[in-house]
Length: 181
Image (cartoon, rainbow, N blue to C red; front, side, top):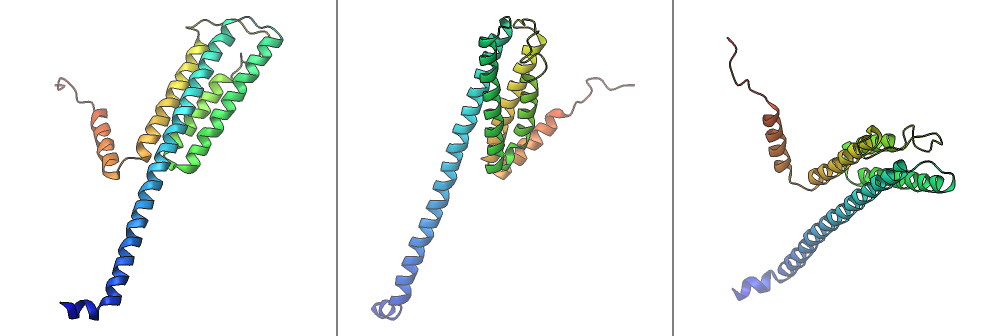
């Protein structure tokens, strides 16, 4: 046995270094993946929070009668936040490809918020059940759902994604309760 170690001493040292290097590579890969998941999660949460704030600001904006200075300021704040949400969502898609549907949803959100009565001096007030506010709220819900779905798809194992797709497909099938005669 002593002869074995003395004969392969250099090879055993090299194997030790290779194992240490392989361990470092694996550990580094896992740490980077975990960090990317955390950063993406915090970005999704921040976008969701900003979208909810836009809805709250839109409720205040549309419930008040148009006035010059205060109305312009509030509209500018809403427009600024909407543009930030759009850019942040597009940046997410650049980092993680599963946010394609979220980019489509953020486009609908942008259209819903900045549609015609927005920044109009002759607009009427809109209550909580108005079509304008309901459209904005619906687009925000869609955006949040797509962001959550994109995050889930980005950081789940491929076989879990396949299982979820099969389950969704089976749930979409509708079997007749009564067989037609």
